[in-house]
Length: 438
Image (cartoon, rainbow, N blue to C red; front, side, top):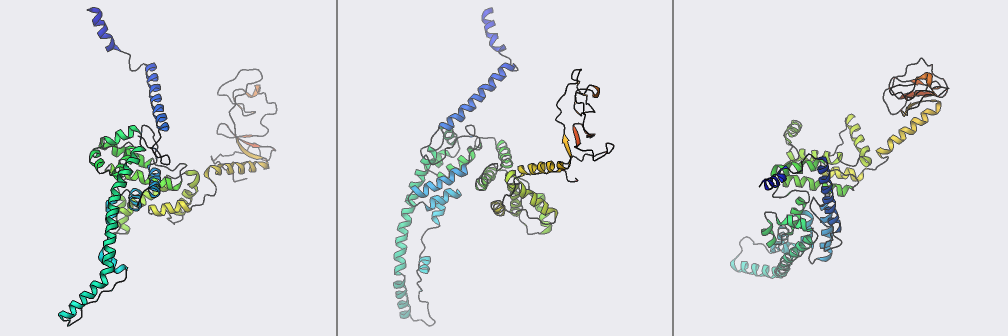
């Protein structure tokens, strides 16, 4: 019994959670699982090779559903019959049946389009004259009626073909999704209802949410926070303006789907209405998202644009875009002259050129130098050669600093190859990285 009790108690003791070896091993396992998931996603191939594949956020963190939708639209235009309505619906994620309803034939419009002018009633018209006028109008409208019947037949075919295309598109989209993503889609609350009608637009909207980690089974507040956080983290990096715009719009849409908002516009709206009482919240929202869009661009390509906008504002010219359309136009037509990363190079070259007259600021690399006889001495600087860890009387440099004027800030020196300035002169370092006074 004692052995059994001992055996029963032993698992309860178990390995301690704070054991650093166990923690390290667990981290390695988690990393292997993540790498394995990424490897599985990379090896996954969809049914259509020209279309990108999609997975869960755990399988791949950064997925561009906008690119997927664009390529899907091109695939529809090339491979589907009567692709017009469906391609527009996929591009805008609208209900294709509502778009098709807009193409419903109308007799009055047909009569107007083919230029038929019907006879109008005249004052004092008799019954016989009225009957004759109606007979002639029927004859005039006969071509329009024939066209109406023909177009209604075509409309019925489009409607039937749209249903078939929706089912086909559903299969294509599912075929580009990993098993893990399909399982996540099946877990959505509306899955069974939407699958019956092969609602491919609902499927695309669900995928856009899920690949960003937003599901209907998620905590609402967690979802709202993550969607808002990801919006502010949406940056251009090395993407084109078009792809960056697509990602930015997707991030805004996810915030809306999470029943959240990117900002409380109450105060901004109140300030705008002091200038113009007719300003709407949408105008204020557009100004804010345009600003966010501009300031999250790639600094190497558009840092100069930021500087120009800021400098113009200091001059009283507010050229910041006021909506997304003008922001995209500004980025598209902005001519990148010199990347920001090259500006420091030019400044350094100017500094070197300024040193050609024999005077220049330099920074000591703080390389320890041992004295002639003694060991290295930390926190000691030689006032003869301006290098560290030995005394001046033990300095290995017999010539010394050669006229250097030591700055009060440690490790910075002012070098003059020929004594042009007296050693008693005090030089104040402003901290500027660009020398412009010599």
